[in-house]
Image 1 (cartoon, one colour):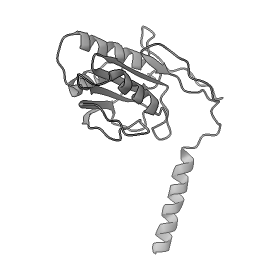
Image 2 (tube, rainbow, N blue to C red; image 1 turned 90 degrees about the vertical axis):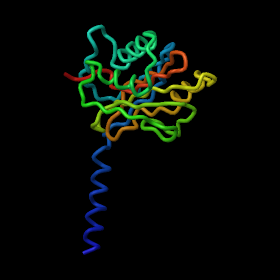
Image 3 (cartoon, one colour; image 1 turned 120 degrees about the vertical axis):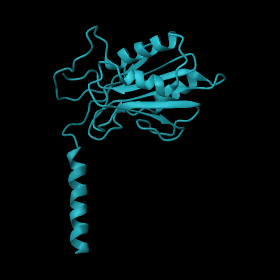
Image 4 (tube, one colour; image 1 turned 180 degrees about the horizontal axis):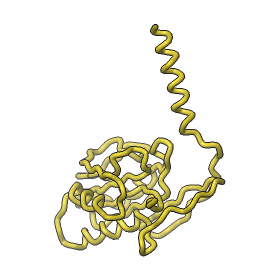
Length: 190
């Protein structure tokens, strides 16, 4: 009986790994360089699909959320990282059931290495793990090197961190000692 169960689990593992495989290899191109805030575009595949929608003003979801973040920072309110994350994920452009939670330094969803050096952090994103969206708000100590922290986030970000999906863009920037980070689709269907 144990051999049958073992064989069944091995077959299940093989099928789950092949389900996420792509038929074509992505074309390797250099990402475009954009002044702050930085938006990184992934390589395109040979397969063409209809472009996802963006907001009415033509901004992507990441750009729209960053504009909201800047308004919050310039509004004079002293919000915690978690309060800002809750406001960002409540934006009307977000079509999914949201999730917000505080994070501590260490391995964070979407990054290749441990992320440390922040005093307070919160993540926001979908409850469903197959949507290629993850966002963070980080508060750094007053004496922290904000530019170095932002660069670390950019260097360690993985657009394809999510199983079977990949974000279209990454946007990371800071206002004072508060850092905004989002990996997102270029738009949401609907």
